[in-house]
Length: 525
Image (cartoon, rainbow, N blue to C red):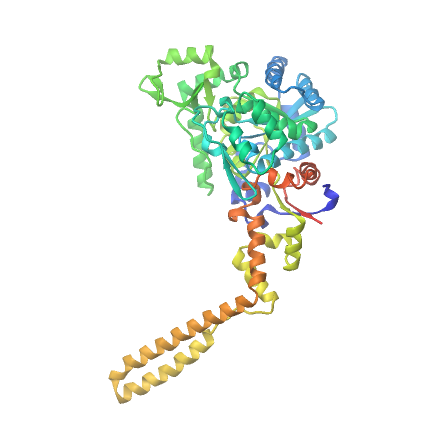
């Protein structure tokens, strides 16, 4: 399946009604938001970012060594990936990063969209700035401990769940139990079979999956849960436990955002760090003059926790507030690509970056898409609809179809008014003859009104019945393209599409323009 087999329509994000006002304001470069980011993503802005971002030879050496260790879990590294791993040692190589949790089987479709946005951004930058190298990076959220968010996925309308009693950072989980999920699937999917059956940990398995799917595009996947990489975090840990710096700065920013009518996306803690060990990731909190790790017996004096940060930085895990800073400390990164909520929470962090004198990356909204298969495209056209119509509410579309079928909305309001006037005259007449009859007349008037209401419903039902099949087709189409009333990218899984269309990923790579900032509708022809 190539993009030539598809009709591509680009529409404004705001026109879909599926994105927040914050994102609409960002994409329109509203003045209200300009204080909360550094540079709006344009090819020219990347030129300025290139001049600002510094990354030492030692940092590059540490990064490449860590990545080579991590890629030892891949039997045969794709030449394009190895080339990018080697290029990271060069002073003119920079990264474009996206990140996501380790959802099993890649989770929702937008996981794929994020990575393709990174790949295509690198392609455009390579063309614009040929004297530099650009490497797409997937930041694996290996230290996340919310297992319930990653342990399931939807395939062909059915939910599959990985059951496990393991605790702590999910990247360290063994893959035990995933073989049961593989056995439940309607068919064998080789990429996932090999990854989950042959990998020791979920981090290794996820790296194997992204390598199999995107290796030809040179995608590099990085695991921040690494002792050498974590050394860059030590100064941050020290300031965090002694000054609670990030909390103060984020709270200031949140107040400014709220004043402008924007709701902060993430919640800051006094200390935005977890304590990390096998089977454990718990918050660090201050208690009097000392510190403790919640839900454990672990306690530290100030001197002890600073010594721990110096000697064992790998035991400290940044939360959502500090993880972006950690990324930028260990990568020669120019831009971060995220969904709408992610971009919005980065707006809360600019002051944190300024305090640590780390360049704030260009913030990019990932590509979003609606994929319309040939059968669904055929249904859409039979119903006389255009792709953008599909984003409208079902009831609204139903009215539109009824209008196209020359069926006006049935209303007996005029008849009710006419009958009400007749009964009003009878009421006036009864007042002059026998006032005790007024109530009886009012009761009859209400009965007549109720009867017309019932008739109106019956007529509407009969009218709907005439076109029940048409409306059912509309309902089915909406359910297919917007499962659970949401964008398909937030519900469906890659395999729902790639199974029938092996060229699905290359078609997306061809169709997505990361700097156009338009919603992409792909319609099979």
